[in-house]
Length: 67
View (cartoon, rainbow, N blue to C red):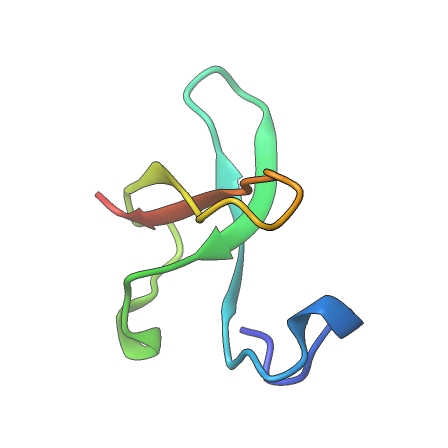
């Protein structure tokens, strides 16, 4: 869990969960876990892909939420 911004783009956001998600195919992806109470986060929990809203440049980032 990050309690302080790790980049200026994240100022004012937090705390948030930085997650390393292992895909079924083997690769690991680093992203954020959303839509989950911080106390409910567990290593090995099942998650599913979701997307944030596009920014002004039309960029949308992959995020993860509990499955």
